[in-house]
Amino acid sequence: MPNITIDGRPLSVAEGTTVLKAAEAAGIPIPHLCYHPAFAAEGSCRICLVEIEGLPKLELACATVVREGLKVQTGNPSVREARRAVLEFLLADHPLDCPICDKAGECKLQDYFLEYGLTESAFRDDKERRAKKVRIGERLLLDRERCILCTRCVRFLRDITKTRELGVFERGVHSEIGVYEDRQVATPYGGNLVDLCPVGAITDTTFRFKTRTWFLSARLSICPLCSRGCGIFIDYHPGFPRVAGSAKAYRIRPRLNPSVNGPWICDLGRYNYLDHHLDRLRKILWNRGDREMEMSRDRVTAILAEKVKELTARGRGDRIGLVLNTGLTQEDLRSIRDVFLGGTPSPRPWFADPPQGRDDGFLLRAERTANRRGAEALGFRIQAVDLDEIGGGLEVLFVFGPYLKEAGSAETIERALAAVGTKVLMTAMPSGLERLFDFVLPATLPSEKTGTFINADGLEQAFAQALPPCGEAWAEGDFVTALGREIGRVS
Image (cartoon, rainbow, N blue to C red; front, side, top):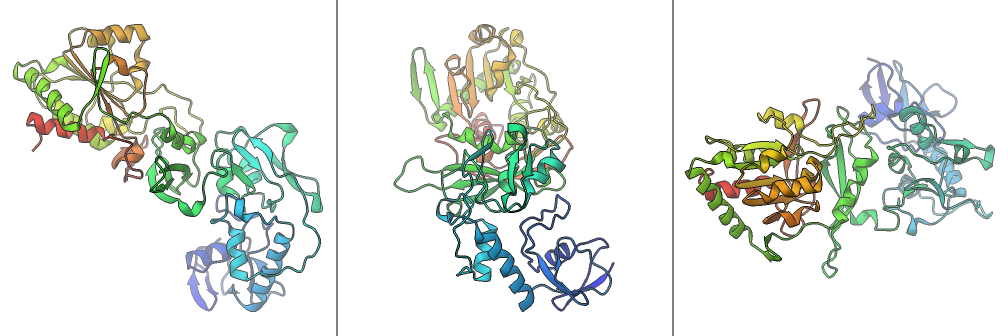
């Protein structure tokens, strides 16, 4: 391991490490705009300049590999003046639209402007005028005036997705980012371009002008939309006291997890937060013929517990049916197993999951639920719903999740449910089947509860509640535990 010195601090670093990475590992910040750890060094922004003893000129920290005895200065006057000059050139034609830029508050140009004190510019000419709203994808807009040609977006599409929709066109001062032959960015990972852009040149139309980043709190969570289990941040606004409904999630970003998703997420997971803005089930409802009555948690728990106790006392526990899904957490499934499946005879559990998708060979898995491996680890046999058995003598049916509609035609499902004595549906999102159930209970989304998923590779990942529950929604495991207390199976 080469021994080097950075700002007078002796360090031992791995062979092949760049000066920028060595400094970062030691907690010494070096400004950079074009560098990203997922790509090879580009060196186009020129702001990571450092002074290396024995060399006549300043060198790029992102592209200079350490060697034995290297002595580096990252913040002396000559280095700071060079960076200040580079930054001034970058800002010469950059628009002064920070008050309306979505990147404001997390923009590196803003941060470096403050650090290097560029209160005045030597440039007196008018700023360059370029296109401000170039559509480069379904949800992506490019502002060419803000672009600093760091080429992160180009390199992502070239090296990561290998789809190559973007390139640098023209030369010199006329250089600009554009799409090839008028085709837009169509990769299911295009949203990562917004995160990669260091200056707000590429913006997301679903977030654009919605709020300011400093109003948002980043909550750690796990994406529930496939068996990969990517690490994510949910950016949440707590709302304003006098504005009803102003609390909500505004975006989802990737959270670095080298063993699962690296620094990326797919667009399916990225735009999952939009589900929070859809119509949600908010109240516990009791359907009585053509009337709906709202009920309290205690009341509905007592009614259902009495029915379960009655069947169990008569030795007819197998007349209770359970329709689960592998998007439930380990804690939810464990509660269901301990409360319902401990007696003899026991209910038969079926599973109704969303349809399989396509494995794209990168992050997105074909299995579109987060915890199938976890359900199997708890001893569940993943068996598809049998509508004939449901309609063949069940007296109580508990359905968790909105996916029963995938089990057959609407007529077949309705006929099977009509033969069941008492039917309970617990789901976060409406499925269109609510009218067929006697009791409808609102459930929390995964982001609204604490739990654990085990992904397809067997990695167990715990996550905490990121958002408050919607209305009277509660976690499936909490409902089953409350039911178990009433039955006498949970102390």
